[in-house]
Structures are given as structure tokens and as C-alpha cells.
Amino acid sequence: MELLIDWSALIGGAAFALSGFLLSVRKHLDIMGVFIIAFITANGGGIIRDVLIGVTPRVLMDLTAFIIVLSVFILGCLLHYLKNIDIEKQRFFILSDTLGLVAFSISGALIGLEHSLSFFGVIFLAFVTAVGGGIIRDILLNDVPIIFKSGFYGSVAILIGVSVWGLSEFDEINKITLSCVFILGLFIRLIAYRYRWRLPVLK
Image (cartoon, rainbow, N blue to C red):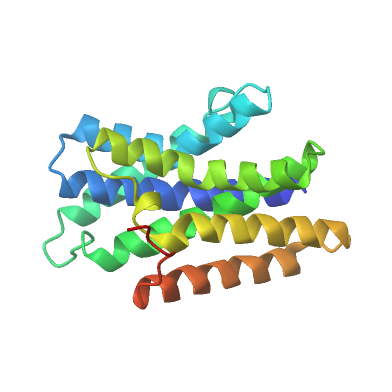
């Protein structure tokens, strides 16, 4: 399970760092601002999760998270200044944000299981890990957090948390089943974005 958590964290960290990079470039921040937003987007949810379960945040224990964000930042800058590549297009942001959402939902749920949390605890950790960094990012950029505008954003994190918990109940957590959950989560989020699915709005 630890290996699966690590891989999910790597994928989610890189994807969320890219989404933070894209959004901050679009907001015309300087290079320090771009790096900070990319770092917070990639690691904010994980820090909140670790504080909740009473452990030292992983980002403070080794350089892996920093190296991932720095690598994405350097690559993003290089691509940004190549005239023939426009990485700020909307589809790049949505795809990277969706990858981060799904990967971090899985890693959060797995960590909840690793700490023997309840059904609610597993789902809550999946949710917080997936959306925490994005909420901090949007607040710092003076935007309404995307979770409050897109009905099938936080909902995907919850569905993934429920799915991972269900797999654990049947002792079926492995690379194949989690890959299926990953692909299904991507599919649901992208289809929801494409067709503008929303939860009911109170009027």
C-alpha cells in the first residue's frame, strides 16, 4: 500500500503543480509567485491531511515534493517561452487539475485506510487531500474556489474515497483495481466538465 500511496502522490503532485503553474501564469504573477502557487497547489492538501492525522507533513521530511514542483516549474517555463507551444490553453489546465484531483483522492483514501480510519475518515481524507491545495490556490489568487463552482469536482473525490474504501472491505486493493478507479475518476470528471454537470443550486 505504501508504494501505491507514493505513486499516487507523485502523479498528483506533478499534475497539481502544473495546474498551479498554468493558473498563476494566466494571472500574470512574477516567477516567485508562480512557484509558490505551484508548490501550494501540489502540497497544500497533503499538509492539511497530515496535520489532521497527527503526523509531520511529508513535504517537510524529504525533498521529493520540492524537486517535483521545481521540475514542473522549470519545464513549464521552458515550454512557456517556446513560441510554438501555448500551454496556457484551457484544456491543459483542466487535464492537469483532473489528474491531480484523482491521484490525490486515491492517495488520501489509502492513507486513511493505512491509519485504520472509519468510513467517514477515509472519505474525508480523500476529499481534503484532493481539494485542499486547490482551495488555498484559488483563495490566494482571489478566485472563488473551483470546488464551489463545479458540482462534479469535490463529488469525484468523494466517489473515489467510497470506491477505495469499498475495495478495502473486499480486500481487493491492488494496482489493477486502483488503476480502474483512477481511469473511472478521470472519465467522470472530464465528462462532467465537458457537459457541464452540476449539483442542484439553491435559489
